[in-house]
Length: 95
Image (cartoon, rainbow, N blue to C red; front, side, top):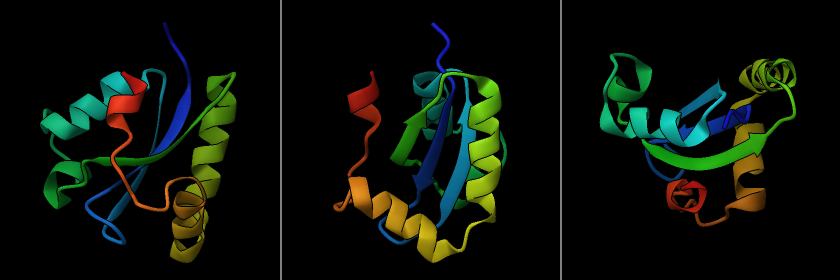
């Protein structure tokens, strides 16, 4: 089942962040964790799912992702810590 989502991955608490959008969150996070494709998350070891938000449409998810990507780093950290103050990996909770 397709479910549009915006997500943030981190290398560690307060580490490198990656913001992305997908129609299949569990599958996409698995791809990041498994380093199956070359790119930012593989290069910088960004594998912890620390925040995500589900959307009704892909258009709204893409719009939200673009907005978050323009945010200051501190705003992203606040977004993560509001719902995940310990920066635990949320991957198991979406399976």
